[in-house]
Length: 102
Image (tube, rainbow, N blue to C red; front, top):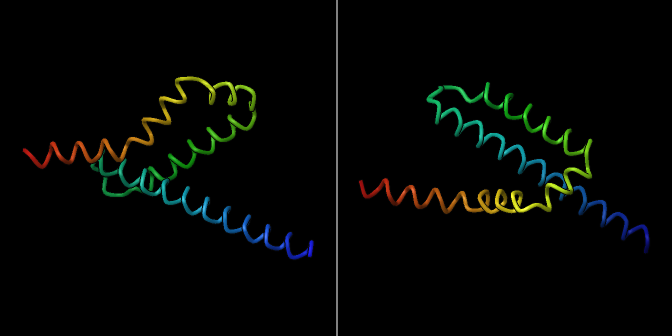
């Protein structure tokens, strides 16, 4: 019985980590593509490497200093940042509405 439960947990962990990896890669691709479009550059490839490097640096810094990251993640500025990030699709809809009127 215990073996089946651990295999089930391993499968769930594998699916979760795979989906997290796919989500991160997709977000990285979309960010690089949008940045290339905003700067009117034909290829998004240089931005992909740049953004991936920045993500690597940010993750490394947050892992090295977990106490500072915990203090920052509990701050009001981090809450505002998360709120703005979550509201980006709403901002896109508002901008689209204003542009379609013009």
